[in-house]
Length: 251
Image (cartoon, rainbow, N blue to C red; front, side, top):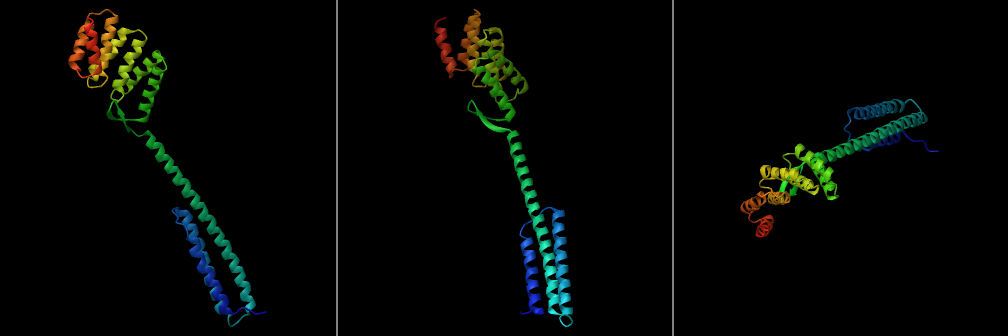
């Protein structure tokens, strides 16, 4: 059997040490404690390598090659154990970093959903927050389903809660329609008058005035004619004004 020489053993061991820092350093660590643990393990490996080199230098002239082989095997086992610990730490750090990244991505997504966003309402861009939009759409869904009583309650709550909302003029207008659908002309007129007073530039203003005239006609209020004339004067290019002209022909 060929016995390994001192120089060949040293070269093999140094090659093993050279592999360790490259292999263990493959990941980028952010966690200070884990990074410190890995550095401590590497220091221990370096110390073992230094001790073994010292033993090789001492034994080269004083002991048998067999003794060096035995010491080399023990040291190699210790290095393998330390290398395994480094791999475990590296894996735990990678998993922790992934969980942290996923957490922040999820948090950012949640926050973005709560941020105001731009919507187009009657051709005009407006900034609304998600809860505001959800509340308005829920109220309108009640109206579309024919539940005018609850739609009126929901729309009334909306305009009180979001008076500056881009949906406010529409909500007030449909509140008037919800009253009208229940044959409550008095409240319908009051609701539509708020549209004219608070949101005179809204595309719904002309229709609100036409609805007022309709309610006044049903109540046999002579003011209906004057309302139609005022509608034509204030909103001459609207479709509501065209309807008002047709109605005036019959008066």
